[in-house]
Amino acid sequence: MTVLNPPFVTGPAFQAPASPADLPSTLKIWYNLVVVPGEKARPAVLANAGWVDVRDLAEAHVRALEIQEAGSERIIVSEGVYIFQEWLDIANKVKPEGYKKELPKGLPELTAGISTYNLKYDISKASRVLNIRYRTKEETTRDILEWVAERGW
View 1 (cartoon, rainbow, N blue to C red):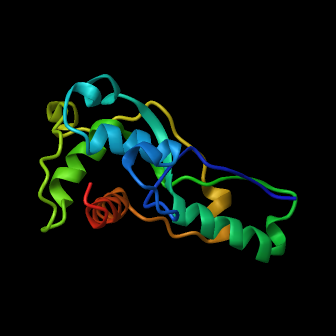
View 2: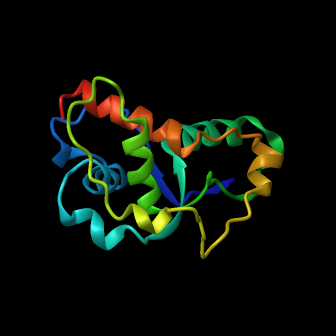
């Protein structure tokens, strides 16, 4: 048995929810803070946590089944850490050309020139055993926004 331990998981959903209210839990959190305008983003801009794109986590599950060395291991699967304001900054930077809605800005001064994280994950085992190439925050953000735009949200 292999145990994969992901932190905050986000990315485009595989299923086809009827509305943003039906989004999977962590994607719903991301959507409400990064896409929905208003004050909702303010309390969470300093949240500091690890994250992984759902597609990379799925790849890790497949590799854990295929790679014998993964057996009997507990593996942290995380691209890295973030301050939630980074997602807002990136969304405003990589917003797809056809995306018409205004995105919240949050408090961009929080990330101006610095990225200080209060935690760190040791992901060396995932790299060594599973050989995962993680998507960046920019790739994941762009893909989520394109996925949202396709649904007209």
